[in-house]
Image (tube, rainbow, N blue to C red):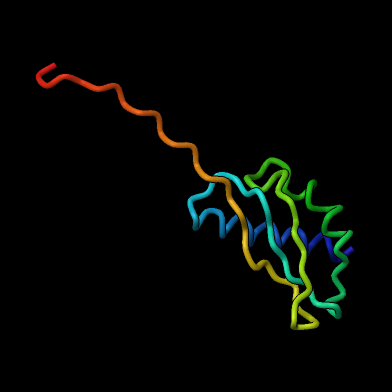
Length: 96
């Protein structure tokens, strides 16, 4: 059951990084998990939708890789979609 707490902390880290990047949405979360970390990938995937619901990370995909450090569990990167361009302003004639 400790994966619920780990997933909650994972979300905090993801949201901090997203805010620092000025992102309003997260599409992917890249994680490294060591073979001896005692963190179950399936449990993180199970809790992620519940924990991230209603946040900019809702619907983000968890992407896992094996860490060199056998006891590691860390966020290595987040992917954010490109922001939509601002609509062009209507041209104005000088003096109007």
